[in-house]
Length: 155
Image (cartoon, rainbow, N blue to C red; front, side, top):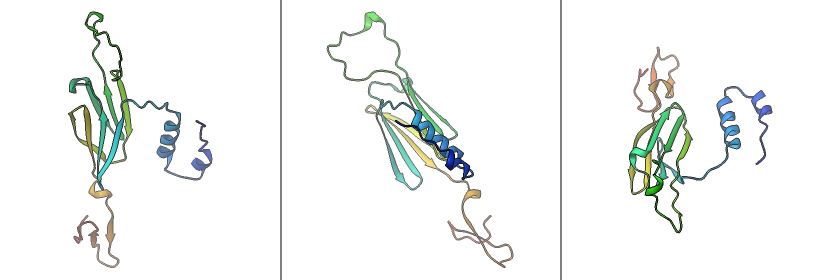
């Protein structure tokens, strides 16, 4: 895949550094499709990431949520050579993995469940009240209207 030169855009924009970094990083990354996953939008501010992790137990999966990053990794315990089965065909992947998902601002992990070989991670976006839009009344003696609820003098 060819590289992108985003320099002209970086020169004419302010505050989009993180977006350009994401684009450049995703272009550089080698795509590994293991384990397969789905990303669903359940509601305006609710999301679900589902990973197919057949063969992994809950104690072999680690989920780490940091600011703007969700990291899911799986580590299989080493099996002694004497305990290994002689496979005629090995089609079910049983290797360790690490998946990273960039999260938008104010998105947090609500919960995670493992059932029937599917790991589901529920995400929710919670915008702080101070960041929500407010309508300021002109000549209203400091009256502020919360656009979400319609309450007057909401600050």
